[in-house]
Image 1 (cartoon, rainbow, N blue to C red):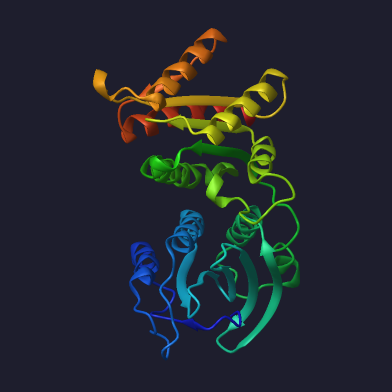
Image 2 (image 1 turned 45 degrees about the horizontal axis):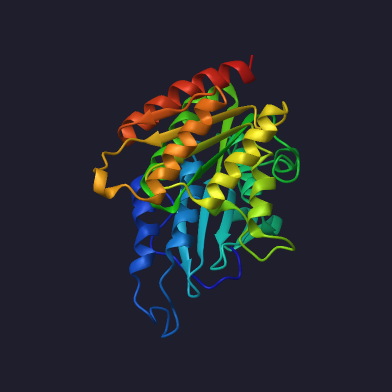
Length: 314
């Protein structure tokens, strides 16, 4: 394993929900739990660790999780003698380590520091693609883990929404995880990214310029709005729509508004911005959709994803 000071609570062959609950429980650790110096894991670290866990478990990999004294979390996937460990550090950076062996008798096959979230996705996909009933891994099989691109057809999705729509984002993430399980046999993978997954360090220019540039690498960009139109989210929409009109990525652009009842005396500047954006979309002779509940949102996106997958994989 990595040289982060880790504490294990159980072995790696345990139910999926148990690993998820274990990771969430890292937030409840008392200060000083590790010989007087351990700290609980932060919400942002737990959230990213759960996304990594869901991705691997969706593909049928056995998993376990460990917390470091510094509040970092390591998510480990196992396949035969192979173990793939992703460490989520407190600054949200990622390290990946692939090892071959049992117990203390192991060799480190690959190690990547400051990995991107896409690097983690690739490593998980590569591990899952190895034949599961092969006990002794040949050098040829091991070479499948690493910089080589997998053969999966990947559709890149970017979800943009305001901070107040955390529950909706989580439901979309769950939808994508379920769809990936269903699509696994067809060698298709939906790669969903939200702004929290992007690099949060200082940039040479504005951090928003960096986000705007990254989202233009995606095939599908989805915007969800509720009771406000954040300035940055609106800027992301303007950039994505302009590129869409130019025939560049994103190939698909969706805007969905969460329906809400507002009394006349509750109408404020933010509500007026919502109405203005709707009129702007209508004026461009484009369409937007409304959703009443999280279930409605998931249902609509699932239908659209089916059409996108059919077009992009034909």
